[in-house]
Each structure stands twice: as C-alpha cells, then as structure tokens.
Length: 165
Image (cartoon, rainbow, N blue to C red; front, top):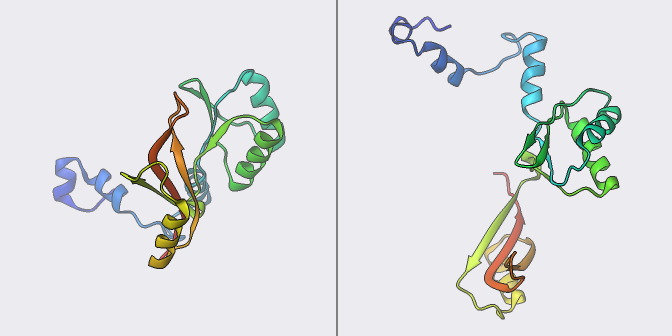
C-alpha cells in the first residue's frame, strides 16, 4: 500500500504503486521472484493440435512439469515456466513437425519493414543495395504473396536484426 493519504482517499493508491514499483531484491521474497520470472517467458501457439490431451501429456513428460495450455481460436496456447522449458517444447514441436507460432523472445526480436508502391518486378538486389548504403544490414528481402490467390503483391518484406542502443 501507499502512504499517500490523498491517493488512498480516492481508492487508486494500490494501482499507482503497482504501476510504479521498482523490484529490488530486498523487497521481494523467493516466491515473488519466481512469479516475475514466470511472466517473462512467452507462450507458444500450436496451430494444428489434433489430439490435445495426448500432446499435452507428451509435452509435460518432456518438460517434467504439468503445463497449462488452453485452446484459443482452435490453437493450443502453451504456457511454460522457464526458458529451458520453452526450448524443450520448441525442439519437441520441430521433431513432431507440428505447425506452431512461437512469440518472439525479447532478445530475438527482428525489425520487419514493409515497402509498398513498388512494382512487382522491381529488383530486390537494388533494394538491398540502397538499404546497405544507409547503414543497416538486412537478413533477407522477399516479395509477399496473397494467401488466397498465391499471386504476387506489390509489397516487399525486409527483415533486419534489431539494434539495441
């Protein structure tokens, strides 16, 4: 709670202190630290989960802990407790060749840039040269296609590693 009497009269002191709390080791016990660590791992979305109870049992045995995974929009959203569990689940998904969409971890995020209004037959090497002349080094450039018709669109996707400053 906050010692601010004005805030406590308004009933918003708890919300304000929770938003402005700076976690230090002195103020937290071990269960608080574990709770914060659990919030840092991002969930994995498994797109085509056909036999979910069996799949969840297999994932739980690999990780060694019972895992929570609700169904969201016909996708299985797997919440893991640690980065190690995240890596084990990713390896399991790749071995089983399941379609999944892992959320990007903070240290693996990439910049994705879409360039519009260029003709479809525009040379991608020319785009690459122009970007490199400005400084950044793109991972790859690709022409985007329509999901329905598989026809090329006049949209170019450029993926670059995020530069931390």
